[in-house]
Image (cartoon, rainbow over all chains, first blue to last red; front, side, top):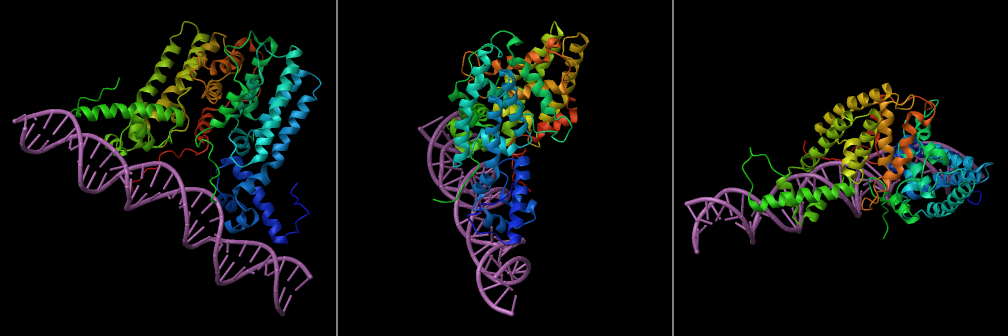
Length: 227
Length: 227
DNA sequence: TGAAACCGGAGGACCTATCTCCGCTTAATC
DNA sequence: GATTAAGCGGAGATAGGTCCTCCGGTTTCA
């Protein structure tokens, strides 16, 4: 889980331990406070000096990458599982439910996917990979007549967004509240929910722009030094 | 609409004109960029120097208050209209639809209601007024058997939140996209939508905390000078 | 036991936002 | 038209925050 590449020569024991602590602290801090938490905060939570943090990770960006690489890979895994679902409708629900479950309570991951700081290519790559997989899922469900007329893949993305917006709270409960709100929404996607939705769906470009428009802060999360 | 209190002696004509321009510019800027847009931005959009802005409004807080007082009053008006609706279910839809319509495309108003900067009492007062009115609406609808079993007023607030989170875009279209997403959600609230929702609703205190937790920035919008 | 690796955290460099100040301009009044 | 009080612009002072560096002292490991 937290192994380092064997190509580099191993760290001293205390250094290795501190690295582990930093990653654990970063996971907590970014999950709670979002991407613009400072490395000072992370270091403090890890019980370690800032200097140590910057010795292990050249900058905030590098820490984010180390931390979120595998979490983004989880999103890919979810899509694969959804595509392999026995029934089309189950695939849709799998995608929605597991994506929300993964991002609920991890504000950092949400912000990473929704308004990616420039300079994190692995996020852009992931977004580019994920889009077509969702399209596929939607087409399959429509062919089976399982989806409400007129529902497009941007509608599914918006569904994730809507529920995620409200998913911050109460992760510690036995039944996290977002499941309640998800239950509220998901029925509207089913074929038997009623006629076609009003208006036109967002085009991929529009959906993307909406994502990037983001919340306060407008996308500027990393303000690197450099020239 | 933009009249000043007659208790103060009137401004010079150019000053009055600039005040009007500043408010108009502020409405645009805060609607687009949210509450942490700067007064410099507002002044620039108004075609006026920053000095003029700070001469007319002692600080950002005062400008926000002048700007949003009436918009908050609109929320009260919506609640009254919803309470007076011929049928209970219509009341619910009125509340949801009109609130979303008002806040969609006005990011400033949304942030104001969702993570009010400390020191704007009129917002807290409004929030305190609005809560019981929503409760009333829900009770009435339940008595009439119009609402899905177990739906509480916090669920309605969350519905507004969910759709609002996605309402930023495309206000200029004939049919703004949020209506599409609203259509997706609203069916889940009806009595015929299915059994009770899973889990427990958020308590008022929990809902309030979720609101205040807010997005990046955590509530610190005004950073006053002073001692 | 010695040296290489590592540590903490004060503080430097830089940025951004709020608000002030003052020489000049404009509107209102006589 | 002249007088004067009110208003104007916008550079920059001030405060506060973030990212990252630096170096004297400590710890690990051979």
